[in-house]
Length: 304
Image 1 (cartoon, one colour):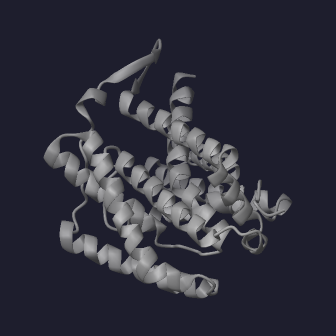
Image 2 (cartoon, rainbow, N blue to C red):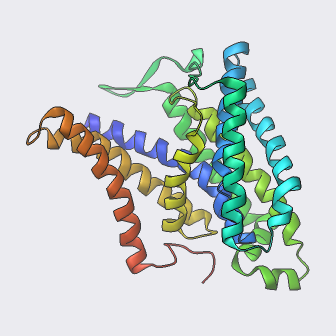
């Protein structure tokens, strides 16, 4: 039971980090119908800048803020140079253009930081574990990640559902043309949402630095489960992305925790470990397929 509780909290933490990445992306896609594959590059930039600042300054808070600021500057550059020219184009154009941004961002990071992964140090104040219940010492930093993810999710819920900005976002996500006819400057709303999404991706990259390697290509690898989350939750839906993120996080964490152990009873250890990881990946896509069979537009689509 202790192990189950620990893995449940790990799954929630991973799911909430996916939520930070997918939330801004799903709003951008939902409002402006713009598919931004380069969103993962913002996650990578935030991770690299935060890891570098943390290593040299020793201040985790300064590192997170530096990662967010650097990513916002990167996002502003993309908005001015590229995305304003992509609005209204077809999705294939979005894919080709933003895939080019991925290649440029990866090569730029490789030129600045090299090919070796970085590992940001865990903040000294959060390094020691905390005993949540008797027999369950849990890493303090992972607990902070979980609480930070929940706080951001609550903040986004209030922003989207109980503010004027959120009302404009929901209107643009539900029916962009009608929102424009009603006098809403959807392009301006998109710019703010685009920057908010970039900040959330940078926050996720900065927070994941101490527990995962910061390396070239990390944005592409995280984009796959983020897109799965968006498909399951429904394009443009914060509520759908939140629930889908937790579902995917739980499936992946439970699969990695329990499948190899179960398979070792029938297979050699090395084979069981590899097969367990493969089946876990398959389970995530099986979950997506199962949801789409009954809800083709996702669990909580913004439209409809």
